[in-house]
Image 1 (cartoon, helix red, strand yellow):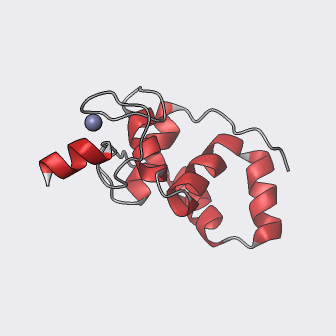
Image 2: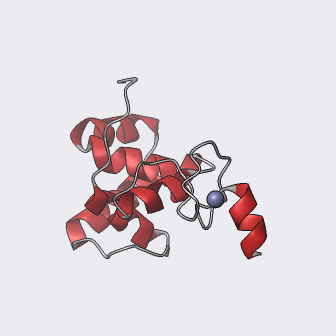
Length: 111
Ligand SMILES: [Zn+2]
């Protein structure tokens, strides 16, 4: 398995966000939708095969499922921003709120 993370295209981030009912998500075509569902349910072997064939989509699904800040990162990518950084103040140090993608300071201020 490759150790480098593929760059996730904006459109791919939006498709995965839609699968997780998140703001900024856009419904993918049915094939992509099926691929995402397959990635969500695949065993390790099949997951590796899917990753070889669809590295960007697989990386986006992996972020959403296993990275504490994955949804926040995908939200930023979907907005055309760098994967890490507060959408409110631009802080890139984190940690970031998983739901809003904001830094802790801005997330607490909004709560
Ligand atoms: Zn902030």
